[in-house]
Image (spheres, rainbow, N blue to C red):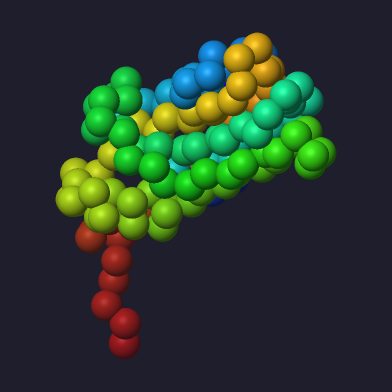
Length: 149
């Protein structure tokens, strides 16, 4: 995974993933441990070169453990065989928190994000993950804040 850091401390992670072959049921494309990864501002899964014989559903889930556990769907897209063989699915911090609230997991929230795809047997797709972390602000401690006059 390539990591890029900007001047205010936010990081952007870019990871091209190996080609995934569908099995007819949900196949895990990527699991992200949120306890070690950090707070996500937004995350995108860019699907390219999908070789489909039927529709493919790509879904981001929130997981109750760092390796997945019990999953709650956050967002999904369907890539149809008649469409171009590409697609993008993006979720942001608000989507993640809202899904955790609906699943009654607050204040702890999700411990992982899991990207899965469900397609016809032998269908394949290529994917790249692009994640942006929250900005890291420095100097914002109580001792660094002064009263306004």
